[in-house]
Length: 56
Image 1: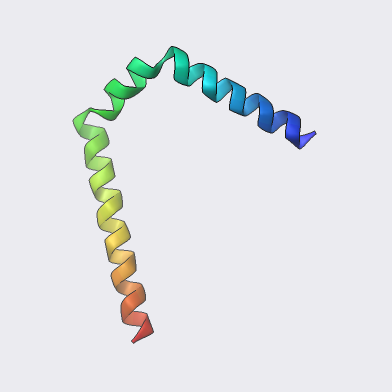
Image 2: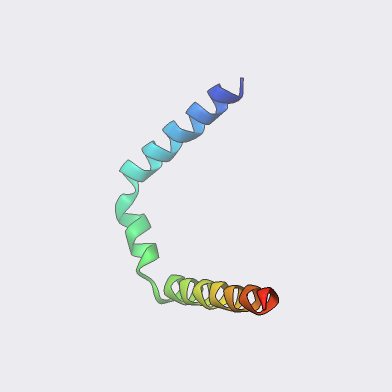
């Protein structure tokens, strides 16, 4: 049963990716999306630093 759901979600994802690739790329190129990516990278670096401090 779960394999059917997984297959359906994969097919829907492929369909959306093929039909709306231009729109997806335009959203990913916006400044807001780039700011979110920068914040995620900063957060990742902060977590890595905290884990290294905890090791020592």
